[in-house]
Image (tube, rainbow, N blue to C red; front, top):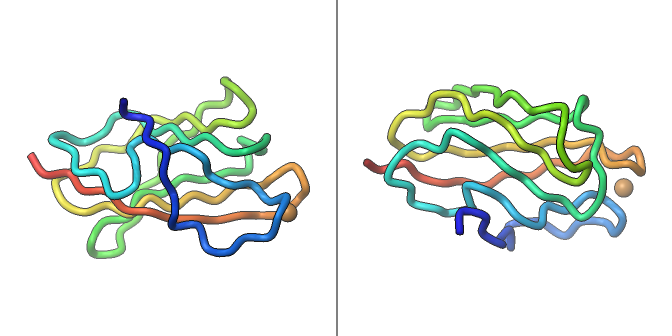
Amino acid sequence: MLLGAVLAVAPATVAAHSLLLEASPPADALLPEPPTEIALRFNNRVEKRLCTILLVDGHGEARRAEIRADGPADRLNAAAPALGAGTWRLEWRVLSTDGHVVTGRYSFRVAP
Ligand SMILES: [Cu+2]
């Protein structure tokens, strides 16, 4: 249920680059409590070691989520940093297997 299919946000991207297919928390979600886990699924393998997930608050302060080294190659699973109430922008940056760096972002809101 938490894994919402979304991301109409993706700007016109060149074929063969990594595309985000599913995200948790989902884009534009309104969450009663902060997420503890972040899960992103892509259309192909990504180089986990060279990927980053940042959570940016309304003041532009970024916190990094710790991406786990294990798990399926087309997914990024991470422990979320401590997030307070408010709107958060999740910014992801991955190195796809074709060697291209792809980035994207979406927002969600924590409103206890
Ligand atoms: Cu590419």
